[in-house]
Image (cartoon, rainbow over all chains, first blue to last red; front, side, top):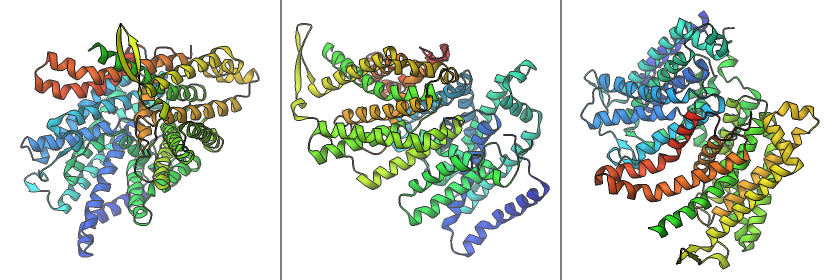
Length: 315
Length: 308
């Protein structure tokens, strides 16, 4: 389960893809399919969220079933900022990251004392707590969620135009992917992967295993918070549905479809799942049955995910 | 006030016993086969639908319950033979993904077959009214149907205790939970033992779903909320331990029910109105999760660890 490193050929592919993505809004507008810019933004944001879970799951080896807590908290923090009159994304987005990261730090500090199945369940329990806390706070909209009266501004530029928000999400994803690629090669990244492979050995070598894990968990939480804040801007609502445990399940599904522990696993998974949803919904109202069967097939026949079909992990 | 507390305590007992029916199967599947089954809640939902549909067709609650439980057992058998056998040896992540997929399929399939509206399930007519209980010199009314649930719950719990603690099959099950390889080495056919436990767990799910059907709505998604509670129960009790599941169910059932009934009142008495109105429901709904986090903090293996 080592991290995937792109070859030179794949690096060029990334650059080509990035160029295409930069031109996408113009292309869609010229085809008069502007509606799909919102969809593309959604895909980018979920790529970011799934990547953040991949950091925790693939990189750190921590199977968390509570990632929705940080995703949703980011969305709520953005909405709360806007409610309080702060609608500058340059401030609100870092605040969302900070808040979600601190929440992850707190939850991680307790959860990481447990192992295996107990860790899965205690992260789920904490996420449920966060869910119930948010829906019982009437000042934050309760069951209805907290709406944003309008989209934020980024460095003074309004994000009301769909393309503007698209470019912000694309920029955020590109920066996160770049940093993540660097992180996997850096000392911290290698140590955390070594801890995933053999915890006892790293402990014996004197590495602060608990701290490394906790930092990784909190980083994942912060990036999920960023994704949540962007999504709140896109949909205009910080919805309690983002905090539900099924959301954690969906993110997990994206990462596993894409490929656990592959740099682009989260992105591939988000693209595949959301495209499938968009296409299948058009033909088949009960597309969840198709999705479920597909997931079963992946578990039984392609357990390493889609990214594994295209690249080999560095061994 | 005494009446209220007494009534809520009985409700808590009733809820706890139903949780036990779910948690017993879950903890065994979890403990013996080391398999996370998120779809356990779906078996509960599908079981409830089977019971409700059969009861409507036969116009009798009891026939419906019997047919529904048998149907869920057959479904459990099919699932075990086709899917779960492949999952036991896989890592937890694959199990989470596969059983999450089952939830999606089950919810959607139920929606296709029975439609999005909740199904109606009536309790047997003889038990529709309340009964009088003489308690502390006062008369106290309690729904007869809820008493029946408490009775069935206690009977199943007792039966399960005898089965697991005193019978030969139960000995195999306990041996499998504490050391699977050793049990296999001693010549026990663990594979069929797994199948039997899984099918039994599915039948208990349907029993709980059918019994709770008249109290709660039989609808899509009913499995998920109860699934998480069942997980909390077995984590508190210790994975693989039937005794732990019983104690955990009763704790969770009572704490959750009493917390929801009494906490808002208690807080209103001590805090200013605005804070109490926000904090009361919030605290009541997270109480059991706080409890679980607290117990895991001090006893990371739960109250009654099955593995030494």
